[in-house]
Length: 242
Image (cartoon, rainbow, N blue to C red; front, side, top):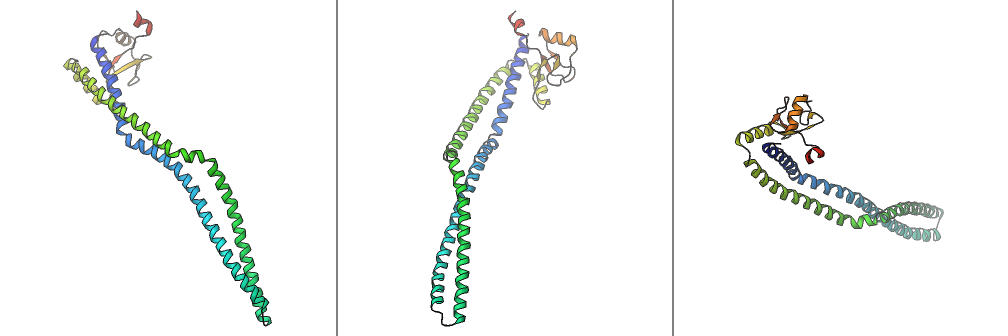
């Protein structure tokens, strides 16, 4: 394979890697936000359960206070009943006593229902105790690992950029111009395409047998008759060894 073609292949690999790294760097903030959102959703679901528990406990406390208040009124109604001077006072005290007893019973029934619901909530929180305890730590670890990955990509991008400039400077000027024109013209930045199963991997055009043979020889620059990209064939291991 001629040296210029080797350089073009390596340059294409470098450029492809640079595009991948740049995409990773450019989308880093959005991808980091996704990680944060995923953990926030977990935290939110836990907070919802905890808030519901707190709300039920507050409601239970309010009901217990109302029961205590009604019991005081009930004691007063019992006294009025005992000291009723006439039928009307007696009936009024009886109605008040009956209403207060029914109200107390209703409040107690609500408390029992709340206690049953609280039991299920406490059970769920107990089952998720490890998740709750480790959530912040897992979030920090995930973000730290992500930031480390992005920092590595930035470092690699700088290294690959310097390598690319050096490799590009060794190309003959005309070949460098052709490479740049092909790379800028294509959306994927591919100027040099591998031939796979007899087809150009860039446009999937099946190559004529003679063209395949010429590309396989690697002693001249061959372009695809369809997309005009420079083509190459990776020698099989046996051929490379020979």
